[in-house]
Image 1 (cartoon, rainbow, N blue to C red):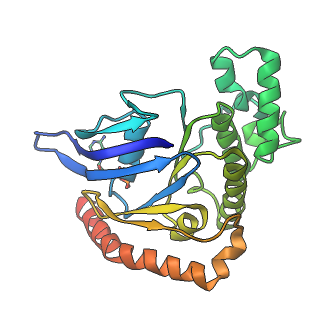
Image 2: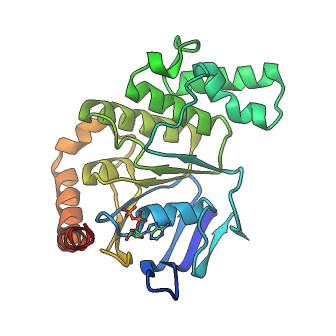
Length: 264
Ligand code: ADP
């Protein structure tokens, strides 16, 4: 079943003004239930713009985004978002952070405690229920943020560089955890990353974008067998995929770099 359909979507910020920026041009793809799709591309190619449009926070200039067969016209409860930046509530402990959305939805206390506890176990935070974010590591805080989104059982989870602020080892561990979580929950996920390795390792497909205006350069199927763990990155099969992704991206990355340098 198709969860998300992005139909010939383009976005120009400040259209018809001297400051107009064509961020995205003619992006077209679908995402099926349970699928994990990563988006990679040079800085400034419109990855976050794409994510914000799917989240209903930014309106496309052209084209349409469909979700479960209906057009997206604004934020929706069934679409959960996890951002790179710190998004936990510092004044709530782990349990109360994870149950926040359920509380907002008016789920009664007993039911939301039970659901939050289940999710806390799922994201590997058992034993840390009463700790506040300041008492947790960056990786654990990101688990809390992921847990808070998953608690609402979203039909689609959007992740914008969720591990971007974390060190390499923590990224690897959380990547493995995310693989397991998505397998256990059949979570449909759209994931933005700068890391080719992360994209190849986690995804069913990788959408490679061109430099701005971001267009689809190539959609790459990642046919590595599941379940996977991080050891997969040492295999020849994986290295070939990684080389292929880098080959597609290399010229775009240079172009993106030059565009960014001009702006700065
Ligand atoms: P990425 O996430 O790939 O780095 P973004 O989606 O953040 O790219 O940005 C794509 C382009 O759109 C960039 O040139 C950026 O400067 C521009 N842009 C992003 N948001 C806005 C905005 N609100 N107003 C004007 N230009 C924007």
